[in-house]
Length: 161
Image 1 (cartoon, one colour):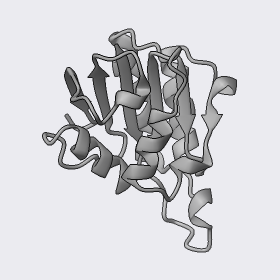
Image 2: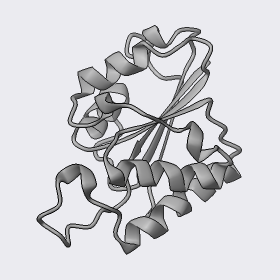
Image 3: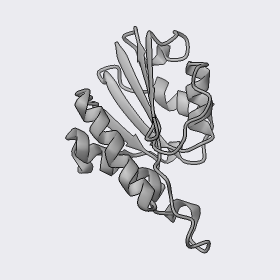
Image 4: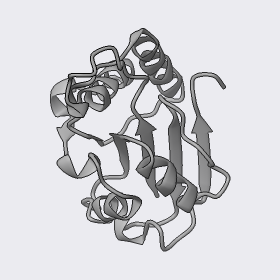
């Protein structure tokens, strides 16, 4: 079984229009919602083998806040440039190339590509609001099968749910 989590970054601030997109931080709501989602994951005993984050500050901060709640070491979060300004196909390529020794992986990134990929994997997911968490369980031994096999189980959660 392979478990994939797609986590859209928490609500970000647009207070300073002069900041480059990668440097936008979380706003107050984002700083509340990310730990809230982390606590929900912790209650379910979610223990990923790997957290991969976009290099954008808002995504990395979301990953760090959730990691703290689920007992994952911040220093072990891997920043991957391929998760920023990509496409659903690019994300799928990253997933399919994951080491088969990993059983549970959590990706932190952005829309529209996270919604596009989540919808492609499960048509019941139409939109991923900020801090949304989409979980896909695949009955397979290889990440390269993701997208070729349908998920055996899908769980979708977001702060206002």
